[in-house]
Image (cartoon, rainbow, N blue to C red; front, side):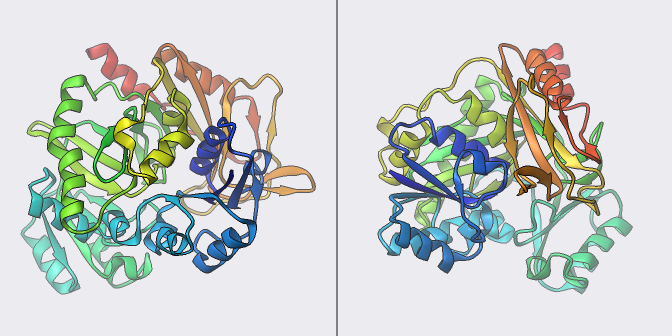
Length: 423
């Protein structure tokens, strides 16, 4: 079986490493992949946004199955284009991917079908948005409607910061047309939980919960990033909470999408806030999260390729999705300065006794060596019986990996461990 994985980050590396375990996965291609992924798949320099190039390559090589992992190609209709050529895919169609590509669509969907979320207003006129802020309570949350690399959200602590965020999106166009409409919503409080779920449009099978660390600095300080590390499972996501989420959020969301003629098949990501009034949706993603995937997939016991095929063929209800016990921790090693300005081009070295599993993201090959090429360079994951042991192992492994201007948070898992002690 020839498999194509669209994307080139740590998430895609984690997916490829799992797919490789299936004996039917004869050849795996990554478009575009990266220098580190090149150890596990054949990388082809075609952009994940080049839908025509992806389809032409898939036809030319004779791809049997495609996994479209990132948000951009899903929003651009990569699955639709591949399906038109008779190539089965894991991932939602363009219409279903709008649950992530448009915050406005997602919020309106939840409102229409009674799925718990923060109250909100939508604006396409900047003056109207600024006027609304004058009578808003703070903190308030300002979101770009479209995709913005996970950075289109501002939690504004006061009126001045909120107005600045709106102007940046709507006037300065810092994220292009993604900010032509904005969502202003109430600020929710409570523990955050990420849950990835497989769904074939009927059955919903959640994966192990996780806790992301979005801020650049220790103690959740500094700017928002794509994610500086994760742990799984999330101690706040108890059996009781999970039951409520399945009944009140997960299944209703899949049914709502069906009613809107946007059947969702693939991985649906639920970003949740556990408020005093129960779990509420902060955001949906139409794909595996990054770096949540790097802690969730190392804990999977079932065969990932078999699950993906079952999703595509709409037979998920009869396919086992099982996870190991224990915990996982992923620490992201970044270029200092990320998510702002940073330097790249530094060699990456890994000591022989590094015991973590490395998922490469911002690296490229240069003369047979890996050098840094992005903000988030790699993630290193460790699995252990307990969360504290997984955290220790992950940091021990991270300290065996070196490159100039290396930066990482030193408190990944600290909040989760504190929560476990309270319980």
